[in-house]
Amino acid sequence: MTVASQEMVSPSALLLVVLGWLLGTLSPSVVAAIARPTRRRELAQVIAAELQDLRLRAAMILVKMRGRVGHMDQAVLDLVRPIMLAESDDPGDRAYGEATRKLLERGDAVYIAAQNQLSKSSVGPYPIPYEAPFLAAHLADLSVFPNRDQAAFLRVWTELKMFNEKIAYVQRCHDRTFDNLSEENHELNRANLEAGLGHLGDRAEMLIKAINRVVGPSGSSLA
Image (cartoon, rainbow, N blue to C red; front, side, top):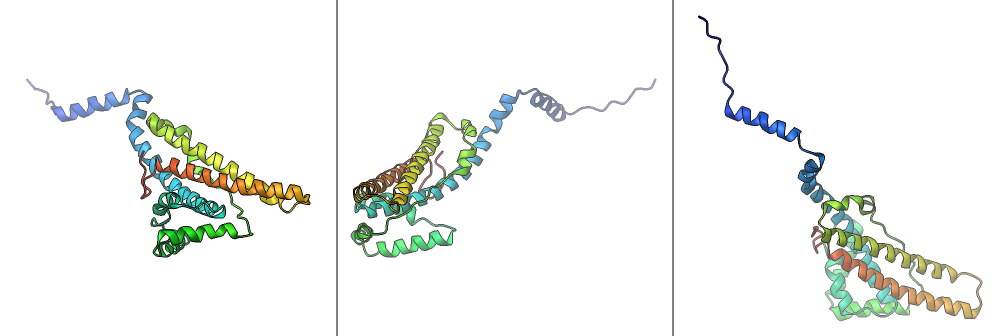
């Protein structure tokens, strides 16, 4: 009598087969839940880098606007100091940070006074709008974050929109200074421009504080 030889299947191989079958039966929602932490980290890293750059631009605007209306003070300096002195790979930003560092070495009071001297300038600043294109393109993907973090990111988005709306207002007032207006209307427009510069500083400050809730001083995401 011939006995057919049989290959024994090891328990580990059998376990792999069963595990593969189970994974194949997982619903798309379960697969998405497994991938969610990785996706969240990827989004957080790129958004943090984008918002770090945006925060520096907002800090520059804040300093310029506060100085232009003569309202630069210690509280504003304390807010923007770590932002302006942070390390950067951009040559222009490094030069700006180094110039800021050298002036601050002379003392906070000297720095504040130097900024407030801008209020005596007859040349008004002409700010430009800023964007966060990656955040804008991935608003729908924010659902991978906890509700608290989603709210923080959306707050940044809202503050950026209001910041840019104020920039557009300042630009319109600035452009009107070249129109053929009556002396009375020129004075009215000048007052509107000065008020707009102050309000733009307010919006820049709110934008920075919103970004600070999701991006740490070093630029790493807090989400």
